[in-house]
Length: 132
Image (cartoon, rainbow, N blue to C red; front, side):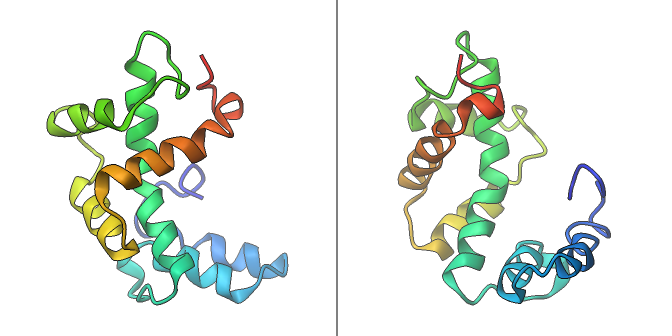
């Protein structure tokens, strides 16, 4: 719901009532709410940790793909993301600390996590406009 409510106050809490109206299971709603620290909902189960670990990093990976000549995820490697990671001016709004904490809490080393997320995003690259 970030596109509809692009503020910390509205994200992700504004989406919860909509999801409840649509009979989305409470475990999923809780996972969505827990991915924002300001809600105060502790991430306890694997789904909650996975969402938190993947939320911010997908934006950084997308940004890296968009500045490549291919504009594609298909040839993107974790090494390229890590190189851009070091440039604090690149995707400056991407909270690298949250990404590191998310991967650690999820139980995955950061480089492996980046590779896994790239691979998952490749499956929907055409829908993301990142298939080259």
